[in-house]
Image (cartoon, rainbow, N blue to C red; front, side, top):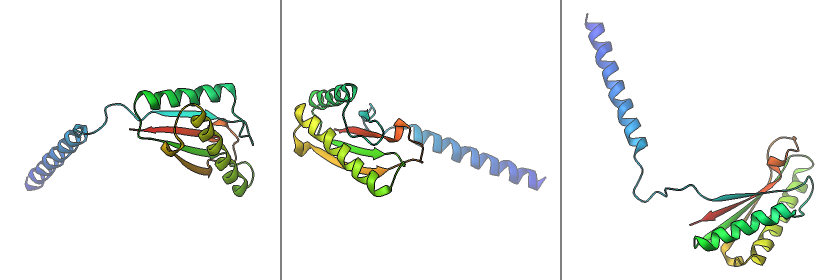
Length: 140
């Protein structure tokens, strides 16, 4: 009988702890942003840093959003797929980052507001477009 009572008490303590954890996780701090961080994705052809018309439109949308929301900064994170040598892909990511930064500047964003983060090679040797991209992140 004592072991049943002990198990029951242990179960109650675990349940209370779990309930407390759920309530704590559900509460949002007062200064937390309610909307997710705006992110714009610019995709590239394999081994390319050329901007397509669609890419230029995406960059223009990002620049407009940054101006409309009085963004503090924009982060340009550039990636390359793992096809090829890591050194080449790092250079390609740096080039993509510079190209997108130049286009943001042409679209009215001050270069001092842009922080470049060329990440380089990501993913596997799968040359999918997902890994050949630049993320433009708007910081508020």
